Length: 287
Image (cartoon, rainbow, N blue to C red; front, side, top):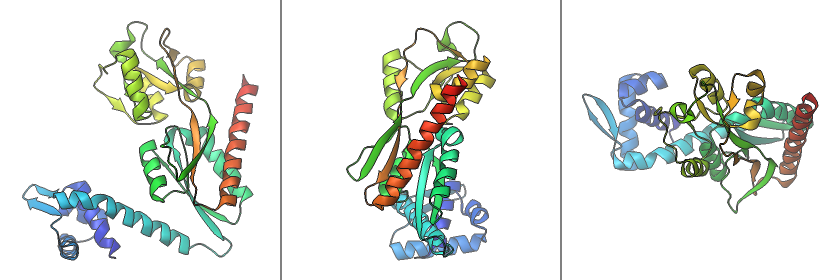
């Protein structure tokens, strides 16, 4: 398996040109052309249509995208694992939703590493859709997120209940005029839109996690945010709660593959729940 050819294929698909792919993978344009040619020969299918404007994936190329991504991810994980120093006898890949890292998961990772010095951690942040996919495909052992996909091969435990509330930095008035859709999961997006009969007047959808709050403040707009994430903005007056608008339940979960080591899973879940309790107790004490 030629991983460099897979990376080159993905780079060409992302940039839309062999020249762009050459810059991304640090190879000459002729090398990119040769790698793609050899890959197409091995697969027995044409992956790109090329013209003066660049390259476009064929139907076969589009079907090959996800297998190529999986192969590259699997290679990177394997290369990481075999290069570990001898003191690490186990390894685990964990992922967390962007919105959960700053106030929770950074502290959890420190606690977990201290408790499990023989475990090598591979940690990543991502949107819920990607975390769910990587967990299902085995590229993650555990994920902490708001919007899990419940499957028979994935165990889960609720960590805490949050709720989405409508907050605004705009002047008082009709909030519909400054409303921005913020993505917190497909199911919730549909529920919010249907209950409130919403259409984003701004023509803008944000999938920025907790960074969405800063956008709302800077641009004087409004949108739904997890209450826990914007509590300090509400206290400071940078944001205010929009009255007479319903809130929506938004629980967070820890999910893990049922085929991972049971003892390690229990230890990691225990550290997550203890960190959640610690963060919650500090918040209560601060009140």
